[in-house]
Image (cartoon, rainbow, N blue to C red; front, side, top):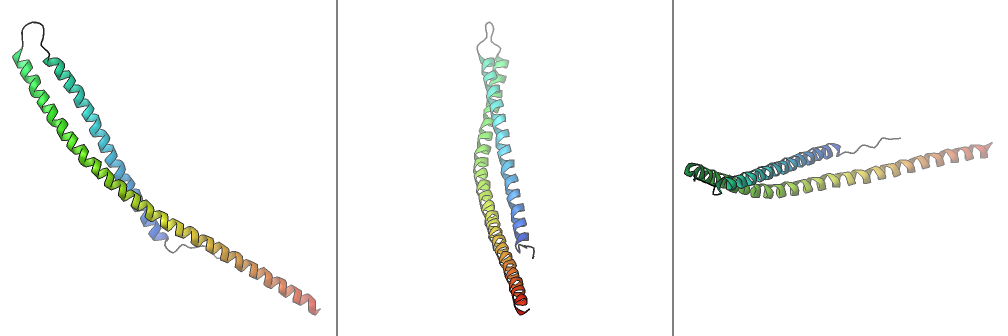
Length: 148
């Protein structure tokens, strides 16, 4: 009985590797977005703390402290805007990577389906070949018994 050999096995393997690479690229982009969001939440917390520091104190007003807090708030808001821009560009990058992964999955699946169909056809051919051999053996036995 002949063993099934998928002639496009190397191509299938290359496409699987490409799909896995796309999957890793997507995971990296999603991780970056998560990190940006964590940093954004940290900045929000720092802004709340800065607002608390800017609240009018009871007693004398410390102008230097108020000025420093305002400057710090401006720096935090600038960083927050930069993070928002980075996140927006990463979101579009994630969508591109997601589409690339879908295409790579489709390529792999099409080859897997082709392999399955060829494997089924091979099994049917082998079964048919086996049946023919058994029929031939049966005919030979019958013909051998008939002549005796």
